[in-house]
Length: 424
Ligand code: AMP
Ligand code: GLY
Image 1 (tube, helix red, strand yellow):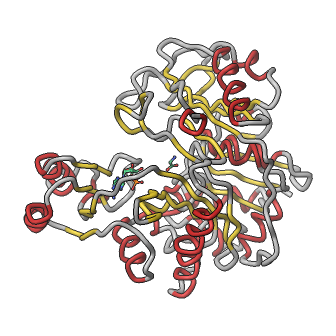
Image 2: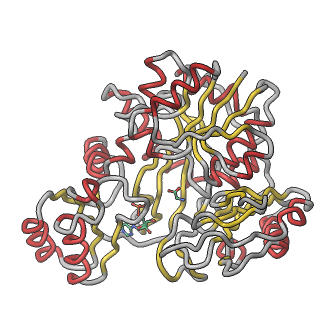
């Protein structure tokens, strides 16, 4: 069968790499893909938000399964558009994607279904928001309602910072329509973990635990990024805690969405904070995380295709269990100079072949392109996700950094402490 992956990041390279190993697949396309996916799949020059063109392509090429990487096409309704044409696609409908597309929707949903999360109030104008801020005090978290590429969350330590964030969202419209509605949320504390599951709207198949590293700097310092590295499993989440998160958060979410007539199919990703009062939901994503996807697929042993097809059809078997290697995996992101502010493009990347020679290492491309001279150069903030598996987390980590050390370009940024918390 023919399979199409939508997206061009490290997550999509990892998904396509995984799908390419299925014996069921005899044609693999990635739209738009990157130089990494071009090595084993056919890149299709279509942007992720051109839903109609993607559906036309899938129809013409008789694609049997489409897998969507990023959130944007999901919130635009790509799944609804494909299903209208009887094209099978793995991901949530536009209505179900609101769990990520609108933080106000997600918050009200969690409140309706008693799913643990921070208390928050929703505002559409500056004055009432400032009034609430005065009564509440700092610290407080200001969140833009809509998609803001990870930049719409402000953990404000002072009332001044919070007021500034409120004005940037509502008055200055820095996030466009995404910031016209905001949440003012209680500030929680505790370590964070990413909990993901595949679901067909009823049956929930847990994916292994994972931890992301969101800040640019070692020791979790500096500005937020899309994620500078991830590892799986995350020992911070004990088996008891994992069970509790599924019972109190993931399963009630899937059931609640089905009960409300908007069943959620696809990957449900909950960003969880382990607070002194137990796990609480910080956010939902409606897709694999990036870079969480990379170490997870490195550990995934099943043929992914039949599972994603059944999930897309809404007929996963209750007794299906996913199989993951016990060997931990880690992804170290190599980022461009000046990321995340204004990543520099065009730096020539050396050492890709040398890194690829290492066993149990995959170098997933993200922000790369091939220039006129055929050289692979930087073309985005997060450039590569160097991912390795090993008999222990330490072995996986050492192997990933061995590969990282073979790769270089001008101004490359790497955190040397990915997974360090789990190793001490
Ligand atoms: P989000 O995009 O909602 O996951 O938020 C991005 C980051 O902001 C999270 O990974 C947390 O580190 C932080 N954050 C979000 N909500 C809260 C909260 N209620 N309390 C403290 N930190 C938060
Ligand atoms: N790594 C966080 C995300 O994918 O949203």
